[in-house]
Length: 394
Ligand code: PMP
Image 1 (cartoon, rainbow, N blue to C red):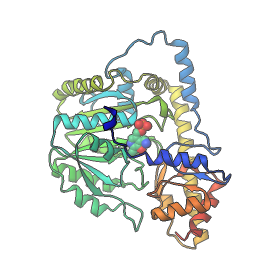
Image 2 (cartoon, rainbow, N blue to C red; image 1 turned 45 degrees about the vertical axis):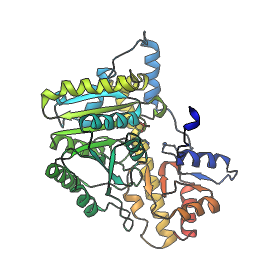
Image 3 (cartoon, protein in one colour; image 1 turned 180 degrees about the vertical axis):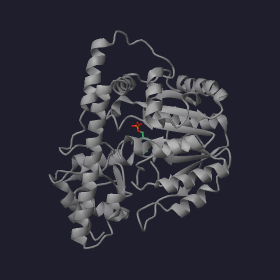
Image 4 (cartoon, rainbow, N blue to C red; image 1 turned 135 degrees about the vertical axis):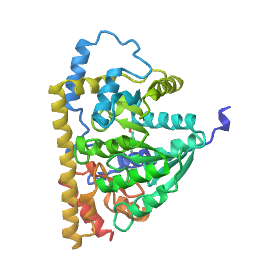
C-alpha cells in the first residue's frame, strides 16, 4: 500500500537548518528556526524550569495517567495566565494538548465538528502550519490582508475590509501577540476595531497565543486576547508554553473554549476531552506539570518572570541595535520598522532572490519570505547583518 504515498512538501525551515549546518563558513548566521537563543547561541533550560523539574523528580511518586484534559490545575493556572480575570473561570473549558500546535489542531477539529462548513480566516501571511493543517483537514481557508509591504506594518484597512466579509459560523484566526512571521502587530485601538467587526459579523475569533511575554510583557501581551474573549459571546484560544517557558520539546499547550453561556461549559469540556481521546488519548504531562508548579509557587514564578523578562529585553535590545545600525549604514529610516516590530520575528520585506543572495554572499540564513529570527543575533552579529543587508542593496 505504501507505493501509493506521495511525497509531502518538505518543511522549509528544517531544510534551511540542514543547509546552515552544512555551511563551513565561521561567519554564518542562523536566523531561521523559531527558537530563542541567548547571546552565546544556546537555547538554555530556564532556571525556574530546572528548579521545578528537580522538585518534581523528588516529589513525584507516580506516572500513572492523569485525565483526558490533563491536570485541571494546569488548566486553572493557564487560564489565569492567559485570560486573567477577563471572563469568569466557569465560562472556560480547557484541555492540555501536545504543544500549541496540538491546541491549534484540536481547535480546527472542534470547529469542524461544530460547523462543518465553517471558513477559517487567516492573516496573509501567517504561521505556515495554520493553512497546512486546515488543508489537511479539508477545511476552507479565506486569507485576510495583514502585512503592508510598503510600511512593513499592518495593512489595517485591508485587514478590516477583508474581515467584514466573514459570516456567523466562520472563524477568524488572530495572533494574540508577536505575529509570526511578520512581527507587525495591532495597537490597542485597532484591536477594538477588530472586536467591532467580529461583533458585527458574528464570526468566532480564535486566538493563537504562542509568545506571551516576548513582546511588551506578560500582561501586556495578553491584553488583546483578554479584550477579545471579554467582548464576544464565544471564543477559542490556543496557547503554547514552548517559547515563554523554553520547553519546546516537552510539547506543552492548552486549548480553551470560552462561552458566555455558562451552561455550554460542560459540553465544551467534554468535547475537548473527547477530541484528545480520539487523537492521542492523554496529553503529555511533564511540561504541563512543570508550568503548573512554576505558576503556583510565588518564588518560582518570580524567578520565571525575571528570566522571561530578560529574554524579552534582550530581543528588544537587538531590535534597537539593528534598526540603529541600518539607519547609520543606509542613511535612511526605512528600517525603523524593525524596532517597532515585537516578538521573535521580523519580516524584512525583501524578495526570495535577495534572501538567497544574503545566504550565498554573506552566510545569512533566513526563511525565503524574509522572516528573521531576531534571537538568532547577538551584539557582534548585528553589525554583520546590517552591513550584508545594505551591501545587498535591500
Ligand atoms: N502558533 C504560532 C504562531 C507559532 O509560531 C508556534 C510555534 N512555532 C505555535 C503556535 C506552536 O508552537 P508549539 O507547538 O511548539 O507549542
